[in-house]
Amino acid sequence: MKIGFVGLGIMGRPMSKNILKAGYEVIIYSRTQSTIDELTAAGAIVACSPKEVAQESDVIITMLPNSPEVEEVILGENGIIEGAKAGAVVIDMSSIAPLVSREISQVLEERGIEMLDAPVSGGEPKAIDGTLSVMVGGKKEVFDRCYPVMKTMAASVVLTGSIGAGNITKLANQIIVAINIAAISEALVLASKSGVEPELVYQAIRGGLAGSTVLDSKAPLIMDRKFDPGFRINLHIKDLSNVLETSHEIGVPLPLTASVMEMMQSLKVDGLGDEDHGSLVRYYEKMARVEVKR
Image (cartoon, rainbow, N blue to C red; front, side, top):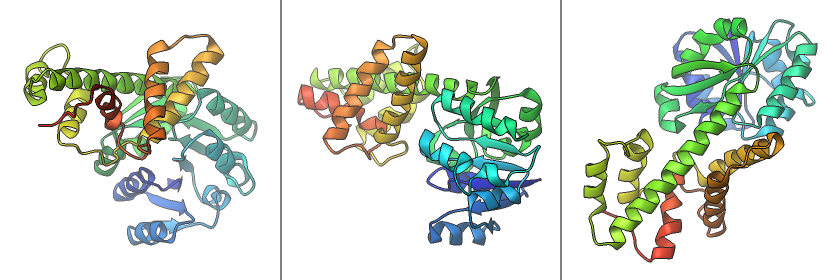
């Protein structure tokens, strides 16, 4: 099985490397020479366009910023649809609007091309070590055929429903992560302003009901003032935009998500959009005039 890969950014590069390590032949397309050099050194084959990637591949993976880029790469001029053979599978691992996934899938299906929407969670560290969580929408038989490839990049690969369900699941994930970070920020700012050591608060609550993977991941970084991006505020804004757009289309009010979205927008205005989403604590710190640190 030959695997194509388009979208070789912070996440896509290590993901494609893990596919190569598993022994698959990987055909890539990139406009960045340093990326081409890095991946050809790891054994990848270079194509000149997404169309050419698709011509040479049985499965084509995309990992792109948002819906417009996915539509362009898959359906645009010299796109995947122009090169993919009937029976090929497109796995879009980008985080995009679920309705767009369904629209793209319908166009591909008319050409006999299958599609899975399979966004990921875990950020760059888990992309590097191959322990991402993958949430997949699509036909079960297509999922089963592509499961071994996806598992080379992930610790967890779960089929959550028909096409679009993967991105609905990812949006649910992003709601929970965003609101968790906001709650952690509120709690640690309260503790700090009250004169209680945030480290001791964290240690006291992490084993109880308030404990979570988000708490253990973000609280130490907040207290150490480490805001280098694992997942940028700007990217979380993009995901929450897709959340709110989808919720409005189907009639689901999301007041907590909308509030956190405005907090993140405030940080973007302050020039912090490229910091880690753990920087959400800075929104509260600014209002309370206190800094959370060990």
